[in-house]
Amino acid sequence: MELVRKNILSIVCGVIAVLALVSLVWPISPMYAELQTTLDSRKKAAEQLVALKNSPRFLPVIELDNPKPGTLVQFPNRAIIEAGGEATKKVQDQSRLILEKAKELNKHELLLPKETEFSAFEFRDEYNKLFKPGPKSFSDILNATLPPDDNDIAAAAEELWNKEYKIKIVARGQQNNRLAVVQAFNTIRDKLPEQMRIARAANFRMYLEPDAIQPSAAIDPKLTPSPFDIWFAQQALWVQQDVAQSLANANASAKQGIIDAPIKHLLTLQVVFGPDVYVWSDQGPAATSAIPKAYNKSPTGRVSNTLYDVVQFTLGLRVDATRIPAVIEELEREKLITVRQMTVSSVNSREALRNGYVYGTAPVAEVILDCEELFLRDLQNQYMPEEVKEFLGIKTKEQ
Image (cartoon, rainbow, N blue to C red; front, side, top):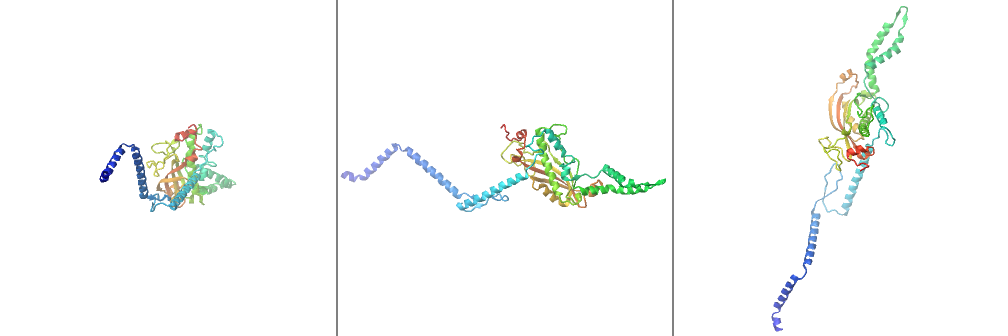
């Protein structure tokens, strides 16, 4: 015992050394691995917490005019999170309202209702009627005309002679007053062309060139159009009808006809017919979930996609030069129409008058408007033939 007491420290150290040797061969390696995994997990969680604490935070974007988010200066608490959620919901609600309004503005009626069965012949006949003078035609919508031509003036002169002057010729024995009556008639007849031009300008609201609004050649009066041809004629017709109605609205307040109308003369309304009516990016009509931008196709960058189709058109007008902004505003009002580019040139009203066009006293300008109109796919799909959907990459019933 004395020996033990004197060497107790050595004995304790020896025991510890023996235990250390034993621990090296004891099966505790799995315990080390488990512990290391736990430590790594906690380290990662700690790093995430530090990153979360130190990372910048931004407010939700709720202003269309300012897409850059503002910086959140403090860690978001419950009140801040609820306020952000409420603001985001308001933006979502406004977006839905905007979409609903856009759909309302973009509704179009088929020339012949889809609910009723109709033949290609019926569409062909009704379609071609719109481009000739008559009820619901473009000339009727626009209350449009042309200056009286030589035949019109000759017919009016003949009617005037027969009704008012011929009956004034009376015989007095061997003589009559024919020479005097003819001289009086000629005096009035010389003024007749100007009077007729002024009267026609006062009774209509716009001059319309005969070839200003053209039908699709695919809807030939003597041929049977295919569903494909009918669809693209209908698509272009919607553009033509929208523009015509806007021009009619712009002139609705005219009290002296063309003389005081903002729009004096429709020169041309050019729309592409057939599949090329739609504007595509360089990738073509392949369906995509993205909304591409192609500034090589349009100053707006808009091209057809799965949300909407883009139709470009050119409009040539002669207008009151002081009212060009009002004309453009009316063209775009409550329609998904955008004027992309405009060229303006002056018009010699005196020269136009010599050709029979009475524009009034206001300065007149000729404007060429490069425009586009959007057509929402959600509204279009219900009318599209299956072959058109296949062409556009829209899933058909068989797919």
